[in-house]
Image (cartoon, rainbow over all chains, first blue to last red):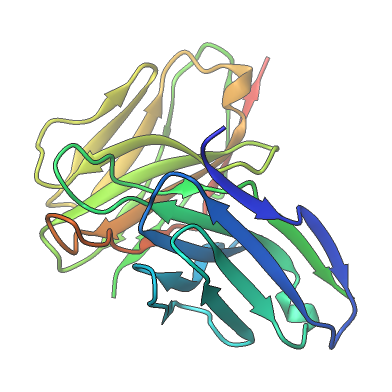
Amino acid sequence: NAGVTQTPKFQVLKTGQSMTLQCAQDMNHNSMYWYRQDPGMGLRLIYYSASEGTTDKGEVPNGYNVSRLNKREFSLRLESAAPSQTSVYFCASSPPTGTGVNYGYTFGSGTRLTVV
Amino acid sequence: AQTVTQSQPEMSVQEAETVTLSCTYDTSENNYYLFWYKQPPSRQMILVIRQEAYKQQNATENRFSVNFQKAAKSFSLKISDSQLGDTAMYFCAFMKRLSYYGGSQGNLIFGKGTKLSVKP
């Protein structure tokens, strides 16, 4: 099925460990995003990539790095995980603007990350 | 900076009744989009309805409709004939329109959500 695929779905890390969350979309979207969701906080933007080859910080970028590997893939890396990074992470993508475009994002199913 | 406020952390409604979820936003922009997303217990984020700010007509999608009051910066969601499957977190979101053709859509800014429970 077409859409946004995130891996893994669940992960437990120890403080100080590193990991990469993977995201891929097969809808030929140009923009991709990483959000985190915390209870009572809604979704907050970590990083985004408006197009292949570009990345920019969002609202809460500290402690994260990203790579837009190609048009399909956008990864999020935690270099040294901290308990404050315990959260649910969502990847999303969106098509370019234009006539007939349905504005809004398509989201992946999320990764629940626990840092102990 | 834009902000989105959902003032109702939790709501409940009886099956088959109507419920309205509130959302207000703050922006100085004139061209933007507003959205309601649904997040059921499965965690998936599902687009319920979208509204383009330049359109005066309120958007509707089957049992879901919005009341868009641009001057008041209000964007409420009405769910008619509520069903058990409507039980979910509902997020209101704002997007500034960045370009008109071939460019990137803006960043989605979310409210904190309203947890809706539909009771049998």
